[in-house]
Length: 275
Image 1: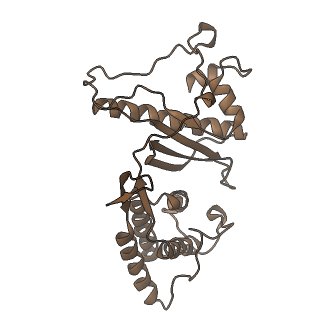
Image 2: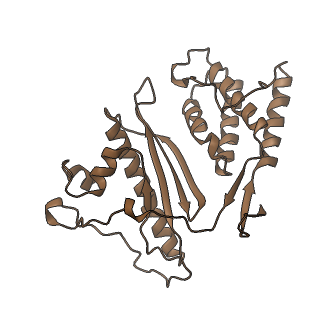
Image 3: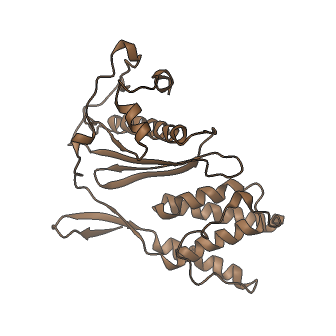
């Protein structure tokens, strides 16, 4: 951790996992050196462009190499927890093959470490400043009308402590990659959560259902993001941090945004009420 100063004179804490990343890369290089191999010299992306792990038919790894693959995934998962958001999706993808990894999968994990070797010093800044919110994009609507069946309220802790301080502006950016798995056709959810301008949570995970439309996959992603935000707001309130303002969620699918923010939209609201 270190303090950084912005051009406007404000200071903030930043976090960098460079030391851990470099140590992990060194261990991988020593392992490869014993096999007369080395990491690729130019890795501009975490995994090779156009690589699809689900269609990889290279030979399966033996027990020793499979255990090594699993250990590398564990190291990469910890890096994601330490703030390496840039490899979150790729690590999630490669984690799907822990039970039966192949040589091609191990090669791509080595490619991730080559990328980390080149970009080991990325830094996450926890900017405390308030974000600028365009309220015109978040028009308030009345969803309590009985014909919509959505007379729901946010759950509040029964033993809520007295809130202190000013609280935060909570934002989330959510998206889905429709049918990204070319074998199972399951989509992938991804979202980032900010308190003020500081990132506090990031997630990339394959959806459990198979959605036939991009609307379906984007709606599931929005639902998963909302569920996490509800839990986060509950947790912050139990810590005595006020959460009076709404959470601002931004997405890029206009159908989902329209049908989840406007009560008079044409789609039926029963499925959304259940969600």
